[in-house]
Image (cartoon, rainbow, N blue to C red):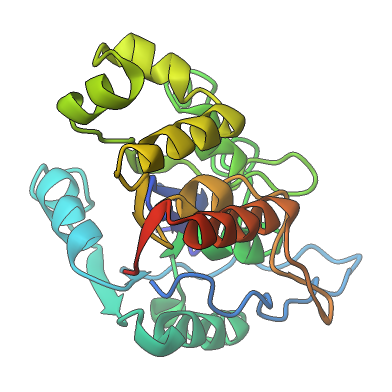
Length: 274
């Protein structure tokens, strides 16, 4: 079994997972990538890397483990001489990222059967790992083809594409978000409960704000609380939270902050929180 690193990405509210590398939640958290250095160049060819027999997978709960077991191991797709070892560290208190970073920093010197082969990450801190040498191009390095990736959603590809345009992951699960409404309220506020017409009325943030004002005039709250629209903004950021030693608040997040303050001040939300 090749001892190459794979990363799996699990993306926030629009839950998706991706793996980057080869072979086959604490939201936000530490955005500083674990340190990595390029190997020293040598004129002599490097000796063949010793291969191990343990597949080490880092994750924070049993969700991926159960799928892997049911659809990979039990389906007979795993070599019989390979042992699968799941290292599960809960997300609380940033424990998962801390444990993963420590293990990655020791990756080069770790015994072959203790090296990380696969690890899960979330959209909130995806770029922290995507933009490092700890993850590999899924096409050039892993060997996936355009046909293998043909049915992926563009947003799941974008979140694991590094600054050089290399795709460092692919999804195993995607759960797009939605806006749920009560049809009787839509009829009262908009004069229609037709989903197509409602979608037209909410097709951009300016229109969303207009409907929020109309809803408030009728005694309705547009959003339950502070967190309801957060993922729509946070999953459309253009860069990581940390750039060197600077904390960067993306313009998309500022728009969420401004919207949340406006909705709170005007009574468009019910001031709840997750």
